[in-house]
Length: 339
Image (cartoon, rainbow, N blue to C red; front, side, top):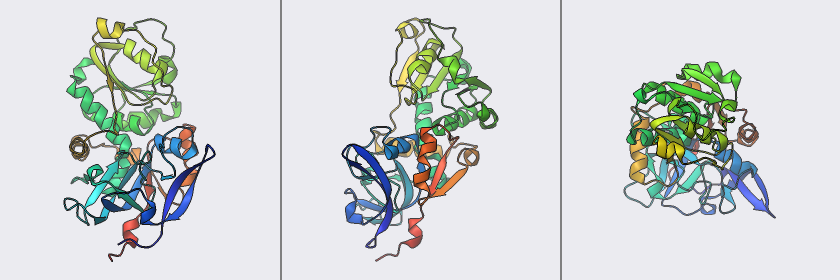
């Protein structure tokens, strides 16, 4: 059993003010669950930065351990289907929203949130992918289920230099799509071409549309911005193309007309990576170890930090100074001794 205190990054709200810091906790301080996981790796997502800084209303209860991702090994379990020693992934599933998350040496989670680490991945590579890669994979799965094909034309990816965008560019290019990377970072052009983007478009080009329809230049899109960018993508998508909406980094608003839908048959697909069944999660993670595994994973997830370093890195995400992914090395399994 885990009896000793361990380190966790915990988020509090005091008189409406968000504070967060590394603390010493015990297992009984964590939200209930069927399994205790010795966390080996986690990662930083934009959502984590919003939660830790109070820039977004992510947590629904306080205090909570931050971190929407974790990968590690089960060390205690009351569910016989998930015995101790099983390597697992947990992404989303209420972590750092209603449940204590992955920025800790140990996590206590519900067994129905667990996913088996598939062959072809291990804890570190799983967290190099993380929720960002999982979301990109879910978007591509939904697009293709809805008929998206490379011959329908180029697929635009907004926020292309971020975690989800980088993964989407890599995966789409690997599947034969012509990828148009939309970014506000000119300095990221070489990086995005290395991931497989065939063209780079300035983000400002998607914020100037005034017509109800624009020339149909894209076969489809994966959008993390919302607002004017999403509206322009819908107006600029070719007949029967699909646009996957995965985020609201620019705005939660969407001001458009029904014309793209009724004159071109464009489809707007909402992507929610949090509320999915265990079976769907496992299927997608199996694909992320197979046909959807990013080819440029080492290039995308080029930064690794320790849990101790974590508090100093959130501001870079809020200020859009980050390209690709950041892995958080935690390594609790190294200090666990079965009791």
